[in-house]
Image 1 (spheres, rainbow, N blue to C red):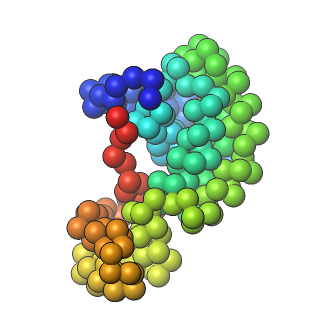
Image 2 (tube, one colour):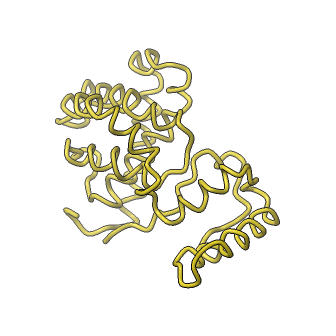
Image 3 (cartoon, rainbow, N blue to C red):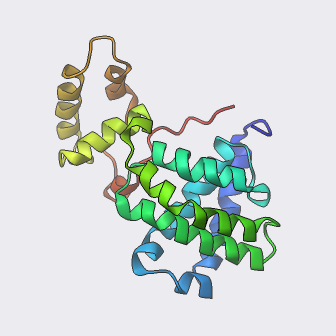
Length: 201
């Protein structure tokens, strides 16, 4: 990372990007997005900004092409639990967002970032369906979603955890997941769970 991680700095970044995203949502760039892309936009921008700082160490004004590639091809697909609509929307949403912040002179690399994220669209989509790169927690949650488990139902999740653990080798690290994950997830968060979010320092 280019700098030491700070919770205080992350909160500041969240506030900054939240304002950028709200202004972006009122722009002509946002209006050109499809309905699905508009629905995914806020979470895509937020998740991208958090990953770029928490794992790569880049603040919004310093986002670069290398960071965009790392985040979009490896980071988000590895950690974010979401359906295909989210991942196919990453490239068009971020390209539009980068062009917006470029116009507002909020990031000097913005135009290059837009071009970069458009170029890697197919790689993002392929990576999102590659279960071999998923983090432990994502694999656990995605398997539950595949089985139509209600992630907000604690009883269902407890039964699923017991069943899932029983299917794994005795020493598997997955057996610890039942203790690590928080059950009773809000309905509004079900489609965008990002359970593995411990920042690298």
